[in-house]
Length: 511
Image (tube, rainbow, N blue to C red; front, side, top):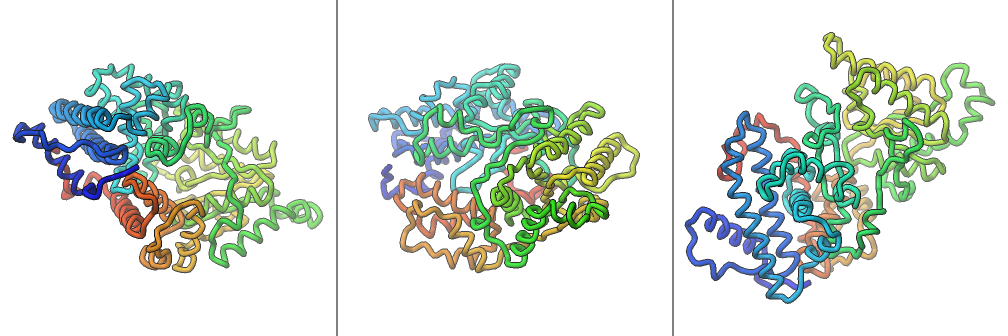
C-alpha cells in the first residue's frame, strides 16, 4: 500500500470542504478534485463523510419534530453519491479495485447491505476521533430509506438476527441497555424488547481489519468465527455465552496485593471440598462461592475472571443481560433461576459482568418498574445464598449496588487504576512480537504520560496499528501511538456528554 508524501489529514479536510462547497452550489470548476490515491485514502474519506452523516442524523432524529431530517435527505444522497463516484473513478484510474471493494464484493451482499457495512465502518473509525461505535437501528433504517428508498419494513429485515449481515457475522447487535448502561438510571428505562429500531449495531472488528487489508480471511472464516455466541442447551443457555479463555493469569498485569487476593481465591475454589466438607464450614455458610471484583472500567476485572477459569480448568459463562430481561411478568425471574440451575448442574464459573446494572439499590416508590427491579434483586440474593457453585460479579459502580449483597460476598477484590510501572508492563503485554514498531517508539514515555487502564491501552494499540496501516506505513511510529492515546482521551470526554450540554458545538445545519 503506497501513499504519496502529500497525503495527510489536511488533504482530506480540503477535499471534504470542496465537496461541501459543491453541494452548496458555490464551487467553481472541479477538475482539480483529487482522486483517492489508494484504499486507505478512500476509507479515511468514507469515515469522515459517514461519521458526519450519522452524527447529524442522530441529532435530527432526536428532535421533537423531524422536519430537519427530511431537508437533510438530499445532502445525504449527494455526499454518499459523490464519495462512491470518486471511488469508482479512482479504481478505474489505478486499474484495480481497492481492497475494501474486493472484500465486500466477495461477500456477495446487496447495495443496501453494503451501505450498512460502510456506515458502521464510519462509526467505528480508525485511529481518529469517533462517535460511539454502535449505531441505533432506527438511524440506519432512516439512512437506508433516504439513500436507496428502502421501505422501513425491509430495513428492519436487513438488520434482523436472521439477516445476511448477521448470519455472515459481518455485523453484531447490542441492545440499548448494554450500550446505554453508563446513563444514570433516572434518564432512561430498561430495554425490555429486541426491536430493530431500539437495537444498536456495530461492525465486526475482524471485518474492519479485512477492509483495511490487515488480515486475509474469507467469508467462511468470518462466518464461522462466532465469538460470544450463546452455547444453547436449555432455557438458561440463552442468557449466557461461553467466554474465550485464551488468557492465563501470567498475561494479566495486577497489583501485588490484588494478585495475592486472587491466589487466595484460587486456593479456596480448589480446596472447596476440604473447606466445606472436611472442615464442616458448610455449618456456618453455604457452599457457594460469591466474589465481587470492583474498580474502574478497564482495570482487568473481566479478564481476571476469564484467566481464573483457565487456571482452574473451568468454563466461564457470561450473563447476557439483554436476553435475561423480559417484559412479561415473571419471565425475568424464571430466567434468573435458570442461570443458577446451570451453575448447579455444571462445574462452571458464572460471571455477571457490570452487575450494578441489575443488582442496584432496591427502590420503594411503589412504581411498577421498581416492583419488577426489586423482584429481580430479591431472587438474585436468594439464589446467591443457596447455590453451590462459583459466582463472580464485576462492577464499576459498586456503591450503587444493593447493600444486602455485601454479606453474601465471600471475597471482595478492589482493582485500582494501574501505576506507571504497571502501565508499562500492560503496554508490553498488549503489543504482539509480530507488530512492527519504529525505532522512535518509547513505551516508557507513553506509560508515564497517559494514566490509562488496561482497556484503554488495548484500544490505543489497536487504533495506532490501524491508523498506521490506513496511512500505508510499514511500521507503527511513536506519533501513531500518541495520536491514538489522544483519541482515547477525547473518547472519555465524549462519554461525559449529555443532551443537556446545550453549549456543545454541532455541525453546520443542526437545528
